[in-house]
Image (cartoon, rainbow, N blue to C red; front, top):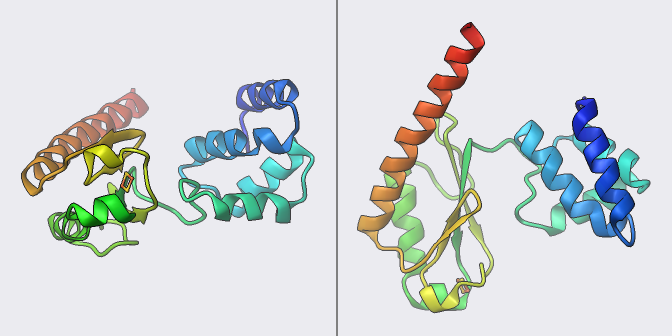
Length: 170
Ligand code: FES
């Protein structure tokens, strides 16, 4: 269930949008950030807030590839598979990330830290090949640089998890 503070914030954003539909992606992303993914319950909540039918929200959710209708890891890695990145080695970048994580595209690591997904152009074609981790875009990615990102990310995510666990114990 949406915390009342988040609900009021979303109602405020919807009220300031020209149409409720315009606010739909914003609402879905906020609910996704809260739940970790856009569950069926979250679709119903989004529909209720937006005054749209659950089917209309579902249509929008499945159109945007950054909206996750299945559980994902704490960090989602999107590897661009559009033309510029493909021409600059995007396919081997995907293979490289998959091998480093020990999963295939579409899967989540057993520790729940990473999900690997292909995606359409990230608008960073001049820096191909490109991938996005969370909200951060990385260009001109090489096998070496991606190995370094992942090691860094594993460490920082493990640290965040440790802090959250410790806070819950206090
Ligand atoms: S083709 Fe990959 S960022 Fe545009």
